[in-house]
Amino acid sequence: MGEEPPNNLHQIQAISLHLSPPDLTNEHRHPSNNLHRPISKKPRMKSTSRLFTISLVSSWYCSNIGVLLLNKYLLSNYGFKYPIFLTMCHMTACSLLSYVAIAWMKMVPMQTIRSRTQFIKISALSLVFCVSVVFGNISLRFLPVSFNQAVGATTPFFTAVFAYLMTLKREAWLTYVTLIPVVTGVIIASGGEPSFHLFGFIMCISATAARALKSVLQGILLSSEGEKLNSMNLLLYMAPIAVVFLLPATLIMEENVVGIALALARDDVKIIWYLLFNSALAYFVNLTNFLVTKHTSALTLQVAV
Image 1: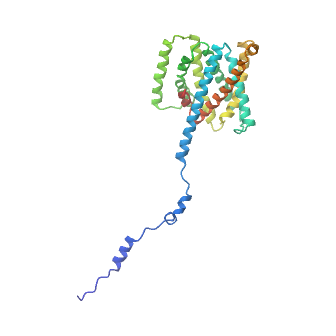
Image 2 (image 1 turned 135 degrees about the vertical axis):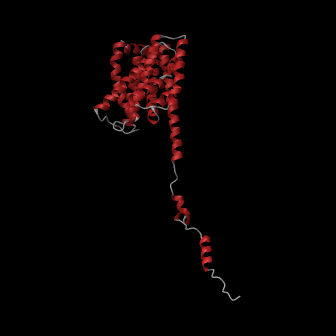
Image 3 (image 1 turned 60 degrees about the vertical axis):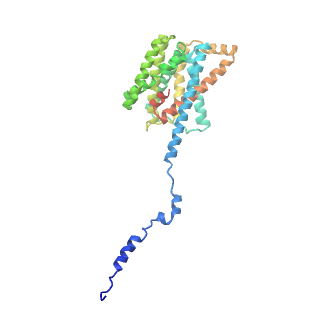
């Protein structure tokens, strides 16, 4: 009874420390500030980029099939048996349309060739491209489109080989494993193809290898920091060089082809529209080809075939 009650001041202070609200940061005191914080756009940008790549591959695939079928019709069914001249028409259209798109329509800024080395690389790309297209068109004279496409399925194999030899780039081992049944299937199909033609097959496999080499060279030109060109500018410079390569070959190997084409046009004006449409479509194929390579890789492009 005579004892004083205990001093609870320290207990009260301790309890108050446990019950006191935590120190509020500026975000908690002013929740409206969170509204001004930028929202991460990475998922949305990634989804948009994926859709853009899919649309590019789809556009390239559809236009490529269209050119292939029209080439087959002109070279086999219609009887216009001049693959080098046809390729030169394609490259002429690519030169003109690229210049219109860049110089007049200002779709992309015009870039200049910076060095002699860069010019040599573009010239080499043009030469390899000419070989791939001309040999491919020649093969269409002797092989059906289905078998031509079957042989073309080996392009990823050649692309992987050239990519390793030229850039020392290795893909995942599973990628190489998946190429084995593709090559095996082409070998089996070649033995059982009723319309097999040896010369046509040699032209087709050569075109396939050249196309793979072009894709690797193209990827190097589009990605090298010191010599980087965007897709449309690369096509602008490559196409006229290809015409320079193709013109003498056309005059020597396809004698009087211009006179024959004019004679055909007098008899059937539709040949002019066929050539114009085919050439314009070829420009779209090449443009989407470059864009797909830039946004993916050379091997991805050829697997898409």
